[in-house]
Length: 145
Image 1: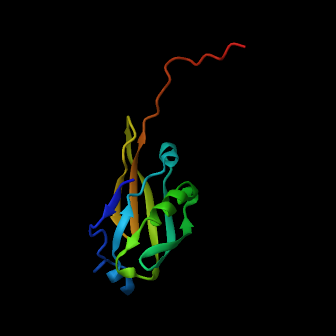
Image 2: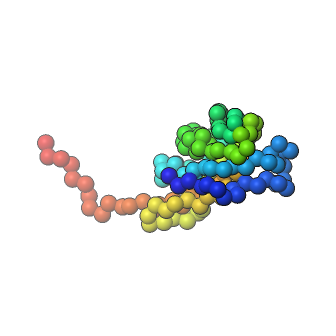
Image 3: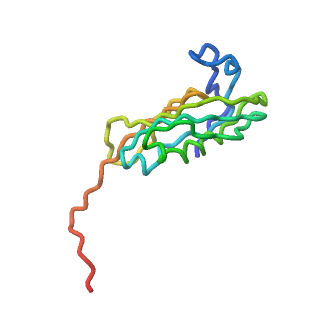
């Protein structure tokens, strides 16, 4: 898995709508989120809101607050990704984050890495492209019995 480290992923100073406690919240480490393969192949999209609890800079709990209808296909990867987050300063807090999984509208010949936009810790946007289905050109012969 790709890991983002030591980069100012979220300096929320001046971030619209960020509560006062979030002004100093800084994600030190996070794995790059993935678009679940099954959901991508099926052309599913989702938005998931998760309540995150942080103790001493580590995520101790992540619970789905709301999700769109197809959200159940995205919840395991969303929660697993959130649990990789580490925060500077030994912070103790809770907040709500939103993961948006979208399709770009393009169809590719082969599976590609999705585009990921991070406004950590409050919003993660993952945009994938569907893969063109492969067509079997020869008819499948039933087994001889």
